[in-house]
Image (cartoon, rainbow, N blue to C red; front, side, top):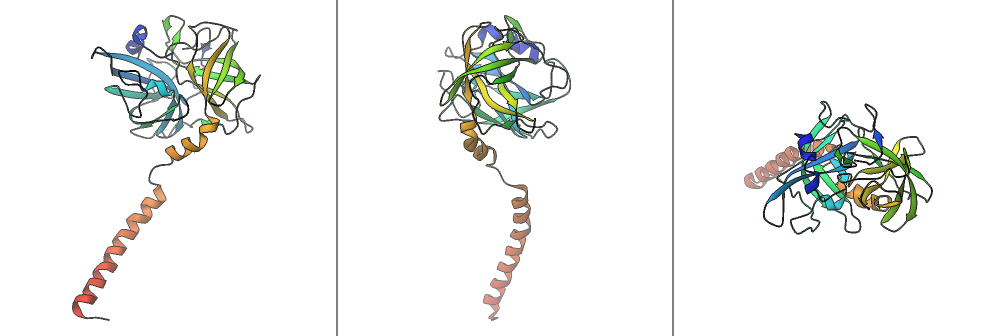
Length: 273
């Protein structure tokens, strides 16, 4: 089914990686394929599409904001398709393993082409990708993963390539193909794909997500949305849920309060001090 979705690329409005390379088995399990079925169109019809993204918490995926648009093309903080599914931990699109979880909620950044998609159930066996807290610098090399087109052909497995950072703006950075080729570039359905680097401890950290660019393949820059300056918003959104310890405490406290209230009522009713 996922392979058939990608055959609808001609209908898609979002930009795997042209002249990239196949990701090795087991590599980059935090990479996510977002499939959308039954997207509304301006003529009151529907279409299917997909985007790329990354798991940043057990129940949260980061992607491009324009991956969630209504029929008029406006970015919205909600799911738009009849069904939106996040697939993580799977290299081959038609392969087995990994996880496929429904997206139930969307939060749009107010300042960048970035969205957070909440999952119906947590993915606990995949280590999330950490958010960078410092911006990339010109000349830095970063890696991209994505499930978009390979040139004009639907990808059959996760693609990857390395890119060099160019200009760094307030919300966008420029990235240009570096390896395997100078014209390695994002393609349709790579939108929201993660650009990441090795942190000081060696673990990967996310610096940006694919936003826009020229027709692929091409040499020269594409645009990617920075995430380091969104870290406070991302943390607040991802942490906006009941904490397990607080939940346990409430479960223990509520019966106790009920008991105390009942005793107080009895004391008032029967004239006890």
